[in-house]
Length: 305
Picture (cartoon, rainbow, N blue to C red):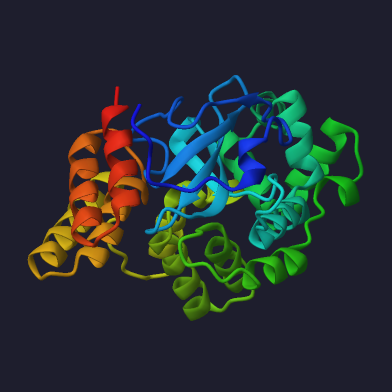
């Protein structure tokens, strides 16, 4: 493989493990072309398909580490590697812990569908209560306590105040989970306008960064709140952002084109025609004068299955 025009920090060259990621992946190998972020290289993986990725800026300098999961191409900034701070990741973990009810933990260990059958309710009804315990009525709560054998204080406790504090402290538009949390809190207190604005911010982020809010159906929630929203499925997003990127290229704005093509491929990932997206991404990076990002896009293009 040709030498890439990127700079690896000394801490990366000697890296052998970080958390559960312990198998070293040589630079440029182990790429899941089209699924991994196209400005990145895998540096460690866990033997089961997940990896830590090192992302680079336009001049080839490393800028952050992200934890990438092959299922759904989900990712989030990571603080597992020394020298790469990611305060937003600590906030994500804190928010997730704050909203992890005892009922959710119980269902993850023992299975939620059998419990729903025992309670005589559809699984979808019980699943909504795993997200937000407040949606479960008093009778269903009482029957759940009896069936599980744990007190209500242990099963249904969630700290929405702490989760909201963590979400509001994150200032990064591409991360989708904060808007989902903020919107849910606004909706719970009857602030319809605030909920709509927050949900739209979340949907404007990268769907692959929804983290623990991935199953919160924000489009449906917006509809119930009486709000119109643009189509946010992967096909619609792909078409929209590819059109925006091409317009920027024609207008002599290659950096904006690169950002648009990046969103076309990875704001809500799916594999169809991802090679075409990578071709456009490389072209935009080259036009913007970024040899590094162009080389990385072409490397990911060559690694497409």
